[in-house]
Each structure stands twice: as C-alpha cells, then as structure tokens.
Image (cartoon, helix red, strand yellow):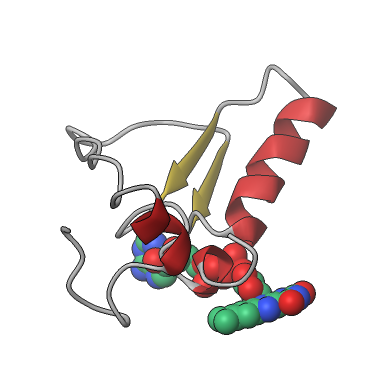
Length: 77
Ligand SMILES: Cc1cc2nc3c(=O)[nH]c(=O)nc-3n(C[C@H](O)[C@H](O)[C@H](O)COP(=O)(O)OP(=O)(O)OC[C@H]3O[C@@H](n4cnc5c(N)ncnc54)[C@H](O)[C@@H]3O)c2cc1C
C-alpha cells in the first residue's frame, strides 16, 4: 500500500486494496476558467456543480495527494 502519512490509507481505500494509481502532474502552465485546490467533498462537488451550471466552463481540480486523502475519504467514504 502506497500511502505513508495522515494515518495511512483510509478504511475505504484499504477495502479496495489500496489507492488507485496517481495521475501524472500537470506538464506545465495551463489556462482554465476555474481552478479548485483540493479533491475532497468541497472541491469535487464545487467542480461538479460548476459544470452542471455551465458545461462550457473549463475546471481543473488540483490535489496534492489523491482524491479523498483528507477528511472526505475518512468518514462515509
Ligand atoms: C472520521 C471522520 C468522520 C466524519 N464524519 C462526518 C459526518 O458524519 N458528517 C459530516 O457532515 N461530516 C463528517 N466529517 C467531516 C467531513 O468529512 C469534512 O468536513 C469534509 O470531508 C471536509 O471536506 P473538504 O473537501 O473541505 O476537506 P478535505 O476532505 O480535507 O479535502 C481537502 C483536500 O485538499 C487537499 N489539499 C490540501 N492542501 C492542498 C494544496 N496546497 N494543494 C493541493 N491539494 C491540497 C488535501 O490533500 C485534501 O484531499 C467527518 C470527518 C472525519 C475525519
């Protein structure tokens, strides 16, 4: 299992056999309409509803670990 901090991997990821593979970092600068920092409930739902409200928006979610690394991955999963 690949996660070494924040109390190791959550029960929910452990139950799946670990964290899915990391995506490659951005190769460089990029232009988007909205940049969201953090892929927890707050960031992911913000991205979801922004796209619902205005599908033409380009939205980037930047996460320093993996989606659900923080509190969002440790309650109901
Ligand atoms: C054990 C537990 C049980 C809970 N039970 C409940 C419950 O029953 N009901 C309820 O309503 N709430 C509950 N909560 C609270 C709820 O889970 C949190 O309030 C909620 O998940 C917070 O979501 P968030 O997206 O704001 O933050 P987080 O889930 O913490 O997400 C923030 C993300 O941002 C990332 N990040 C941070 N800094 C950077 C950076 N500089 N660059 C890029 N990424 C960054 C982190 O890695 C993380 O993935 C519980 C929490 C815990 C821990």
